[in-house]
Image 1 (tube, rainbow, N blue to C red):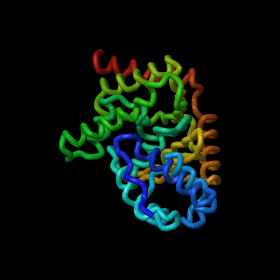
Image 2 (image 1 turned 120 degrees about the vertical axis):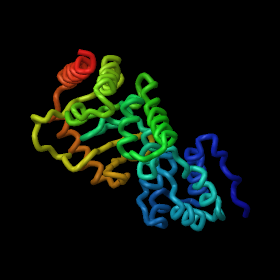
Image 3 (image 1 turned 135 degrees about the vertical axis):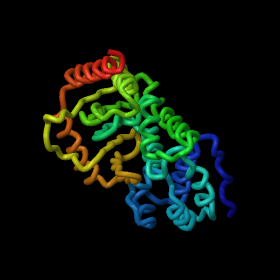
Length: 279
């Protein structure tokens, strides 16, 4: 039996691929859990593939074609969704982020990507790749700003960020860039678009000292947690892992300054940077 035709990569290919997977699974009379057993993954992982919150990797595409009798349909089309403007280790997380209804993030060293300005993002990307061509840096900055368009919607997704004080004090791109970056966050808070808390140095030791955490919730898929290190990243859907890091995030919010006090600190630090730049 001939397989379905290729998907149009210009029309939300991953969502279409997920819909085709759901159709093929139901046609085969399999539940998500039953198909997951044949792929050696959880049923929730299959649900995330169908919802488009997880990228289909070639090894799973091959198994899907074999189990569902779709010839090489999924293997051919998973390549259409593999291209990304983001670094490889972050690409899947960025795509999941775009479909999330709620995002909770702890940022230990940097202003979160969704809250960055072009100037700040440019300074950070240049620090990561000091010998890269300007065109490469600008492509990364553009991709990061495209991510931030999520906040153009007045209500969704919910973004709640706990930002370590270190991210406010570490000067990236100069004091004028930092003043602009912090005022951008202040503006989003004043518009009630985001919730931001600052974890002050005075909070001392805390449960997320090992690195950044991003929790993502979805309307029709299980939640995910993303961990990131230098040049690496991992997306997890294991319920116990997600619960553990959700508790970590809740402990961070308890140790952080209130949203009101955090706003006051952001405004004060931004003013200090602006004054130091133009005394």
